[in-house]
Image: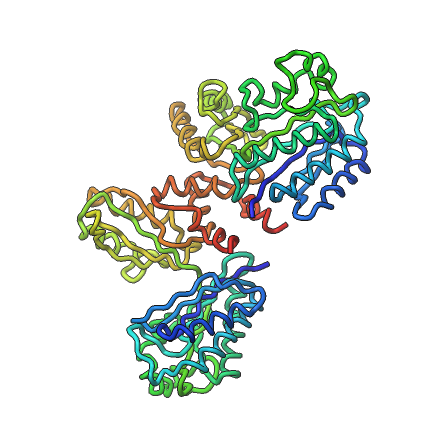
Length: 298
Length: 298
């Protein structure tokens, strides 16, 4: 059985009854697990975390769209978080026994059905988008719901599915597939934030560093430490150990060493196993040798 | 749900019908998965690999005893492998969501029931044994079935469960709990087997090295390489990374470096995750952060 994670972001974080109706609709789909959901009132936004195989997830996301588009009206929606639609973003993330291509196919199938059934235009993003200008969520969302009608009038911003005009109350939705994020921080043996900032600039993609690294240098106030705070957006192509070794090398340049590192939140076990493989110089190793994988697949 | 592995070794490797009857008896217990079984005719011995929670495993091992004691007679059994009983050894191995103490309790419960129901005396071994002289399987089995009556007459070898005399046809059984073994080899950048032998002697427990390491130096003939070939008998207390680093340091002494390492067969993911934690200097990390663990437990 494949495991795909899906994290729909919905533009409602204040009316608990609406959030509960959406949660109940998800729970009503056999084969889907609702792992978590939480609402932020100031953002006026809720994030649902679902897991399951492709077909039950497809049904769950459609059920979520049905509830959200019936209850949410972007014309009166206010909140701090940028948003384009009632169901704002829906990423599908491959976890186990499933390829990125299969998640892309799922995103496209759901996108097509959403535009047909609910009249909501859909943009594909990240790995599901073939258009390099429309991979980045922030680019697609720029201008938000309020600027959407004008933006969609430009041929450059014709949606991937549906008409080139916003749904009056539900706006548009961004649906796609991406790798799981790993939030990874490295604490330095120094309080010099300027060093952390220089290291961050050296290793992050946006300023010439590693392809799947976002990084910034910050101060951990309560411990008086400088930290390189990172998001690793594809742990397969830019693995944790390479980031760690590069930070270590750059830190040496300033006479600084690594105090410790930390993973914030969840991490796929493969992201850690690949670091063990690297440092132990493991050859001829396959995922099938991990005992838990054997037990799970039998 | 807890996952315990159980690997009963049965003294029958030639009569396929007997082996199949045992396999069928195991398959008949709901909640137990028969992951593997294989027979060796020259050893005249079969090894079954089962996984499940404590209660179904208890029933499966009793069902195995019922079939094996009915079909196997040690008085006429011949084979290359040393053995004490029809069901020779039954280790329980904690895999996930279960402690060693729980596996010890299971071994004792099964041992008591085996002696009562089938009249087979039982020795506890490894972590299930409180007697330091009776932890090691080889010590308990020394003398084999043929020497068992004389051995059991000594108070030192009174069994943990049952009478101090062998079952006429089924001998005695050794039941216990142990950590999973990790078969781990390190290939050196040299063909000098003497270097591999010296490193093996330096790192193994028996000659003064790490507590849970068995090691020997061998030649990998087809690649003309020297290898340190190891069994790690408790990867929690003697972790892989510490073995790797010690071998690397000892090899330097002879001007030799590590070419690569390899894990033979299965390995619990925790054994690799702990190496990632070590090399990445990960702090504040818990198993609950591994995505797959979250998905499995919900």
